[in-house]
Amino acid sequence: MRRTGSSPRQPLSRAVETKAEILMAVHFKGQFELTLDDKGRVIVPSRLRSRINPRSDGEGFVITAGTTPCLWIYTQAEWDRIHNELRRFERGSPELHELQRDFFGQAEDLTPDRQGRVLLTERLRNWAQLDKELVFVGCFDRIEIWDAEVWRQRNEDRDAYSRRLNLFLEEHGAYAKRIEKYFGGQLVED
Image 1: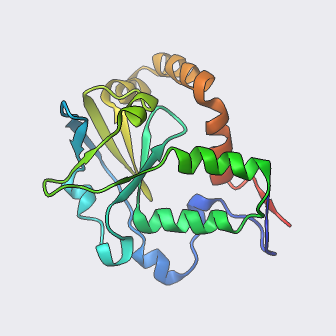
Image 2: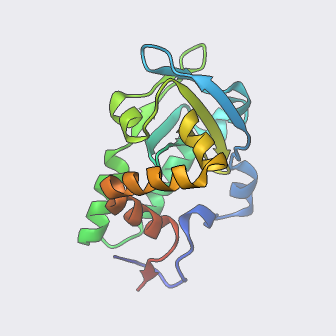
């Protein structure tokens, strides 16, 4: 898969077009523990929601599967930027088609209700191995949602987390490799 243009490919996560975009881009940080309700809803922490300017970041969010057992949430503006970045690649590449199927096929729109709750579908909850207790993690241009036990293992019991991650990658490794290749900037331009 090759991108059209003449400058070297930057990793998407670090590609910023202008100084104005740098000033407008929302940046998330912090960790927040929350509980999933019986209907599969969870409140997006107000400290994360308050970072969003609807004029520059858009209304609502887009959620998709992460490359580890977690979910990635983007603002609508960041999702649009990712979409536009993908449009720069040559069409017709089987690798590009797989990437689009994976990344966009897993994605869903999220619109918080008046209480700030969003519905996490069963399909995405299963992907990320989410139970009731969750951790929201601000990760610069996105928010990640982790199962609290998986997050604890990641931070406190690296052996248990490595075993869990290996099992996850046995099932979802092809997806993770395609996404990491794209976001990591390993694609080259013509």
